[in-house]
Image (cartoon, rainbow, N blue to C red):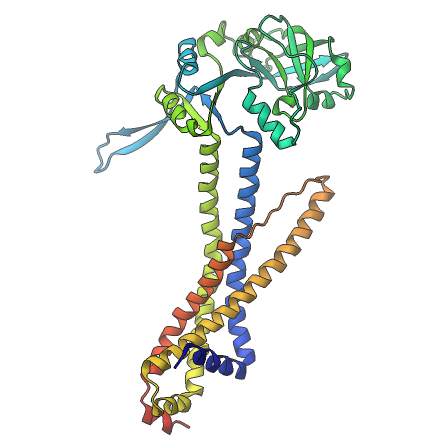
Length: 445
């Protein structure tokens, strides 16, 4: 028998029992739909997260931290040794900064520390817990890579980090930059009007029972420039590291805190994307924690792969349950066509022909189930998309991301899996039909 003969024969038989064929295929379609729906949601959310990371993290930038996870093998009395992960602290000192700066392919450095528990006041308008960032003005505040990244994202090649006024340099004293988003929170919409104005930064330690109250640390500055809201720093106040040192010492109740601990973070910009891995390795060998866009995306994908596998298992379980229905359907088909099988064998059909006839029928049931599952998943995605968009709009969210993503490998893979499970489910009934004695089959009423 030719392949087309198998198709014609099985199609004809399935049409004879349309309702049974539909119900069996429908059970397979539910599992297929769940696989596509769950995994497409995982793929869509992963894409949103990775795109966000790419948009906000320059590709050539390595983030350096003084904290690094260090895994050590601990000798214990049991049969196996155990591993213990500890966080190792290595100060980012002047020697390390100089060494990193002189590494091959390093282009720029940006050295920062965050100041906490600080309020700001401009013309009587105040904001508590404002983000304050101390920056070492011997290095970059905004690296060329960061500026280029934002320009590409905003599709504006002329976009600059300072929208009004001027940037601060190491020669400026008591000058700061303030972000447009922070000014919005203060109720100031005329950004240009704050240039040259006085801003007061106040750090107040929280009250502790039994501990004498310490007077707040207050310092006044002049606003030199306003940071565009397109940049992440647009929500912060940027001060020089020399000024930040005083706030850090007060906040940690330790004189010369910065000189002891060093900066909180460093951004290292390399010349080419291909240099990120090698420079990261060199810095890691110095005892520092390093992350880059590649490592972040790799970690994100690892998390989502696990999530997608868990979600897929739900659909697979449903398909495996549906495969019981396929076995039942094929077994019933054998009993109904026992006499036909005997006639086919009497006419010269081999065991292989009979076996493939029923395997093809199982595959066709899986194919129909896969097609239905694909259609159902796309319909459900559209319904969920409309419902989610309506809900988010009620919350004032206008920029709604695409939550579902349907790569071809998912669609084809789900179809193939539905067919494969149906074929496997049909192997036992097909073998049973192939082994039937033609004489006994012909006598069957």
